Amino acid sequence: MAEPILIVIDGFAQAQKAPQGVIMPPLPKPMRGKYYVQMHTPAEVRKWQFFAKQIGIDQMKGRVPLTGALEVSITIYLPLPKSMPRKNVPLALAGTLLPVTRPDCSNYCKAIEDSLNGVTWLDDAQIAVLHVRKKFSDKPRVEILVEPIEMKTAPVQDAAATASLFPSQTACRYCGEPRDSDRHLAGGHCFTCGLTYDRHRSGDHIFDGAQGWHDRMIRAEASRMSR
Image: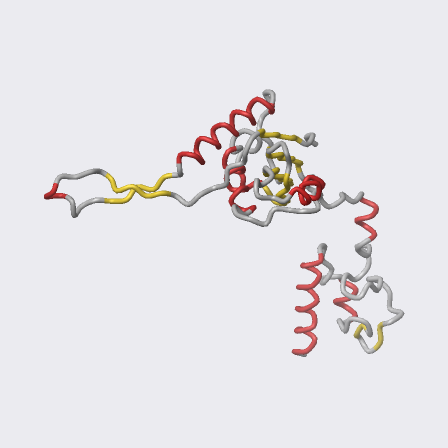
Protein backbone atom coordinates (compact mmCIF):
# COMPACT_ATOMS: atom_id res chain seq x y z
CA MET A 1 0.00 0.00 0.00
CA ALA A 2 1.36 3.44 -0.96
CA GLU A 3 2.38 5.85 1.79
CA PRO A 4 0.32 9.01 2.48
CA ILE A 5 1.48 12.14 0.68
CA LEU A 6 1.49 15.64 2.19
CA ILE A 7 1.54 18.63 -0.15
CA VAL A 8 2.01 22.10 1.38
CA ILE A 9 1.39 25.17 -0.78
CA ASP A 10 2.61 28.31 0.96
CA GLY A 11 0.86 31.63 0.47
CA PHE A 12 -2.71 32.70 -0.03
CA ALA A 13 -5.18 30.13 -1.32
CA GLN A 14 -7.10 30.93 -4.48
CA ALA A 15 -10.70 29.80 -4.80
CA GLN A 16 -12.28 28.76 -8.06
CA LYS A 17 -14.27 31.51 -9.75
CA ALA A 18 -17.04 31.43 -12.31
CA PRO A 19 -15.84 31.28 -15.92
CA GLN A 20 -15.64 34.59 -17.71
CA GLY A 21 -17.03 35.23 -21.17
CA VAL A 22 -15.46 37.24 -23.97
CA ILE A 23 -17.14 38.07 -27.27
CA MET A 24 -15.02 36.53 -30.00
CA PRO A 25 -13.85 37.63 -32.44
CA PRO A 26 -14.10 41.42 -32.98
CA LEU A 27 -15.95 41.61 -36.29
CA PRO A 28 -16.57 44.40 -38.79
CA LYS A 29 -19.98 46.08 -38.77
CA PRO A 30 -21.61 43.87 -41.47
CA MET A 31 -20.83 40.78 -39.40
CA ARG A 32 -21.39 42.02 -35.87
CA GLY A 33 -24.60 40.03 -35.61
CA LYS A 34 -22.57 36.81 -36.00
CA TYR A 35 -20.45 36.51 -32.91
CA TYR A 36 -20.03 33.96 -30.15
CA VAL A 37 -18.95 34.02 -26.52
CA GLN A 38 -15.75 32.21 -25.52
CA MET A 39 -15.60 31.08 -21.87
CA HIS A 40 -12.33 30.84 -19.96
CA THR A 41 -11.04 30.49 -16.41
CA PRO A 42 -10.09 33.82 -14.80
CA ALA A 43 -6.39 34.68 -15.07
CA GLU A 44 -5.77 34.81 -11.30
CA VAL A 45 -7.13 31.28 -10.89
CA ARG A 46 -5.01 29.90 -13.76
CA LYS A 47 -1.93 31.62 -12.35
CA TRP A 48 -2.45 30.13 -8.87
CA GLN A 49 -3.18 26.66 -10.28
CA PHE A 50 0.04 26.77 -12.31
CA PHE A 51 1.96 27.76 -9.15
CA ALA A 52 0.29 24.99 -7.11
CA LYS A 53 1.04 22.40 -9.79
CA GLN A 54 4.73 23.32 -9.78
CA ILE A 55 4.84 23.05 -5.98
CA GLY A 56 3.12 19.68 -6.18
CA ILE A 57 5.64 18.41 -8.76
CA ASP A 58 8.55 19.47 -6.55
CA GLN A 59 7.11 17.86 -3.42
CA MET A 60 6.21 14.60 -5.20
CA LYS A 61 9.97 14.15 -5.76
CA GLY A 62 9.60 12.04 -8.88
CA ARG A 63 6.85 9.77 -7.57
CA VAL A 64 4.16 8.80 -10.03
CA PRO A 65 0.58 9.96 -9.45
CA LEU A 66 -1.48 7.75 -7.16
CA THR A 67 -4.09 5.43 -8.63
CA GLY A 68 -7.25 3.98 -7.16
CA ALA A 69 -9.58 5.44 -4.55
CA LEU A 70 -8.18 8.21 -2.38
CA GLU A 71 -9.02 9.90 0.90
CA VAL A 72 -8.02 13.57 0.82
CA SER A 73 -7.90 16.01 3.73
CA ILE A 74 -7.53 19.68 2.78
CA THR A 75 -6.83 22.37 5.37
CA ILE A 76 -6.92 25.97 4.17
CA TYR A 77 -5.13 28.41 6.47
CA LEU A 78 -6.43 31.92 5.88
CA PRO A 79 -4.77 35.16 7.04
CA LEU A 80 -6.15 37.02 10.03
CA PRO A 81 -8.50 39.83 8.94
CA LYS A 82 -7.21 43.30 9.68
CA SER A 83 -10.58 44.18 11.18
CA MET A 84 -10.43 41.33 13.72
CA PRO A 85 -10.41 42.59 17.33
CA ARG A 86 -7.21 41.84 19.22
CA LYS A 87 -9.08 39.83 21.82
CA ASN A 88 -10.17 37.38 19.11
CA VAL A 89 -6.68 36.80 17.68
CA PRO A 90 -5.66 34.10 20.23
CA LEU A 91 -8.96 32.31 19.67
CA ALA A 92 -8.48 32.39 15.90
CA LEU A 93 -4.91 31.08 16.10
CA ALA A 94 -5.99 28.31 18.49
CA GLY A 95 -8.67 27.15 16.06
CA THR A 96 -11.57 28.05 18.33
CA LEU A 97 -12.71 30.90 16.11
CA LEU A 98 -13.18 29.75 12.52
CA PRO A 99 -13.70 31.72 9.29
CA VAL A 100 -17.29 31.87 8.10
CA THR A 101 -16.87 34.29 5.19
CA ARG A 102 -16.58 33.70 1.46
CA PRO A 103 -15.07 32.04 -0.51
CA ASP A 104 -16.62 28.77 0.57
CA CYS A 105 -14.80 25.47 0.97
CA SER A 106 -16.14 23.92 -2.23
CA ASN A 107 -14.63 26.68 -4.40
CA TYR A 108 -11.25 26.28 -2.72
CA CYS A 109 -11.42 22.52 -3.24
CA LYS A 110 -12.20 22.78 -6.94
CA ALA A 111 -9.15 24.95 -7.62
CA ILE A 112 -6.90 22.66 -5.56
CA GLU A 113 -8.18 19.42 -7.07
CA ASP A 114 -7.77 20.64 -10.66
CA SER A 115 -4.25 21.94 -10.00
CA LEU A 116 -2.99 18.54 -8.80
CA ASN A 117 -4.46 16.47 -11.64
CA GLY A 118 -1.71 14.41 -13.21
CA VAL A 119 0.65 15.29 -10.34
CA THR A 120 -0.57 13.80 -7.06
CA TRP A 121 -3.45 11.82 -8.59
CA LEU A 122 -4.35 10.98 -12.17
CA ASP A 123 -7.77 12.62 -11.92
CA ASP A 124 -9.68 14.22 -9.07
CA ALA A 125 -12.50 11.73 -9.73
CA GLN A 126 -10.38 9.27 -7.68
CA ILE A 127 -11.20 11.22 -4.50
CA ALA A 128 -13.76 9.01 -2.77
CA VAL A 129 -13.53 10.63 0.68
CA LEU A 130 -12.94 14.36 1.13
CA HIS A 131 -12.38 16.38 4.32
CA VAL A 132 -12.12 20.17 4.12
CA ARG A 133 -11.36 22.72 6.85
CA LYS A 134 -10.88 26.48 6.91
CA LYS A 135 -8.76 27.95 9.71
CA PHE A 136 -7.01 31.16 10.58
CA SER A 137 -3.23 31.34 10.73
CA ASP A 138 -0.46 33.91 10.78
CA LYS A 139 1.16 31.82 8.03
CA PRO A 140 -1.35 31.40 5.16
CA ARG A 141 -0.98 28.11 3.31
CA VAL A 142 -2.81 25.05 2.03
CA GLU A 143 -2.09 21.55 3.31
CA ILE A 144 -3.28 18.54 1.30
CA LEU A 145 -2.97 15.08 2.86
CA VAL A 146 -3.59 12.27 0.37
CA GLU A 147 -4.09 8.70 1.61
CA PRO A 148 -4.80 5.71 -0.64
CA ILE A 149 -7.85 3.70 0.41
CA GLU A 150 -7.14 0.01 0.75
CA MET A 151 -9.77 -1.91 -1.19
CA LYS A 152 -11.00 -4.83 0.87
CA THR A 153 -11.89 -8.05 -0.90
CA ALA A 154 -13.86 -11.03 0.33
CA PRO A 155 -11.67 -13.62 2.05
CA VAL A 156 -10.89 -16.71 0.02
CA GLN A 157 -12.23 -19.85 1.67
CA ASP A 158 -10.32 -23.07 1.57
CA ALA A 159 -11.75 -26.18 -0.04
CA ALA A 160 -12.83 -27.70 3.29
CA ALA A 161 -14.76 -24.61 4.33
CA THR A 162 -16.43 -24.35 0.95
CA ALA A 163 -17.41 -28.01 0.95
CA SER A 164 -18.97 -27.65 4.40
CA LEU A 165 -21.47 -25.15 3.01
CA PHE A 166 -23.12 -27.79 0.82
CA PRO A 167 -24.26 -31.33 1.54
CA SER A 168 -22.37 -34.23 0.06
CA GLN A 169 -23.11 -35.35 -3.50
CA THR A 170 -24.75 -38.39 -1.91
CA ALA A 171 -27.43 -36.17 -0.34
CA CYS A 172 -30.38 -34.33 -1.82
CA ARG A 173 -29.51 -30.66 -2.41
CA TYR A 174 -33.13 -29.77 -1.74
CA CYS A 175 -33.91 -31.47 1.55
CA GLY A 176 -30.52 -32.86 2.59
CA GLU A 177 -31.78 -36.45 2.98
CA PRO A 178 -29.37 -39.21 1.90
CA ARG A 179 -30.08 -40.32 -1.63
CA ASP A 180 -30.29 -44.03 -0.75
CA SER A 181 -32.15 -43.60 2.53
CA ASP A 182 -35.78 -44.65 2.80
CA ARG A 183 -36.15 -43.74 6.46
CA HIS A 184 -38.37 -40.75 5.61
CA LEU A 185 -39.93 -42.23 2.50
CA ALA A 186 -43.48 -43.49 2.67
CA GLY A 187 -46.15 -43.92 0.08
CA GLY A 188 -43.54 -43.47 -2.64
CA HIS A 189 -42.81 -39.81 -1.70
CA CYS A 190 -40.24 -38.08 0.49
CA PHE A 191 -41.82 -36.41 3.49
CA THR A 192 -39.20 -33.64 3.40
CA CYS A 193 -39.12 -32.51 -0.23
CA GLY A 194 -42.12 -34.29 -1.71
CA LEU A 195 -40.26 -35.95 -4.59
CA THR A 196 -41.07 -39.51 -5.57
CA TYR A 197 -38.91 -42.26 -4.18
CA ASP A 198 -37.47 -43.11 -7.58
CA ARG A 199 -36.57 -39.51 -8.40
CA HIS A 200 -35.17 -38.93 -4.93
CA ARG A 201 -33.10 -42.09 -5.20
CA SER A 202 -31.85 -41.30 -8.69
CA GLY A 203 -30.75 -37.85 -7.55
CA ASP A 204 -31.88 -36.17 -10.79
CA HIS A 205 -32.62 -33.00 -8.84
CA ILE A 206 -29.16 -32.80 -7.27
CA PHE A 207 -27.28 -29.82 -8.63
CA ASP A 208 -24.14 -27.92 -7.61
CA GLY A 209 -24.48 -24.23 -6.78
CA ALA A 210 -27.12 -22.25 -4.96
CA GLN A 211 -28.84 -20.93 -8.08
CA GLY A 212 -29.01 -24.35 -9.71
CA TRP A 213 -30.29 -25.83 -6.48
CA HIS A 214 -33.04 -23.20 -6.34
CA ASP A 215 -34.02 -23.81 -9.98
CA ARG A 216 -34.22 -27.56 -9.43
CA MET A 217 -36.32 -26.97 -6.33
CA ILE A 218 -38.84 -24.87 -8.31
CA ARG A 219 -39.03 -27.44 -11.10
CA ALA A 220 -39.49 -30.28 -8.62
CA GLU A 221 -42.32 -28.46 -6.86
CA ALA A 222 -44.02 -27.64 -10.15
CA SER A 223 -43.73 -31.25 -11.27
CA ARG A 224 -45.20 -32.51 -8.00
CA MET A 225 -48.16 -30.14 -8.19
CA SER A 226 -48.91 -31.15 -11.78
CA ARG A 227 -49.36 -34.82 -10.86
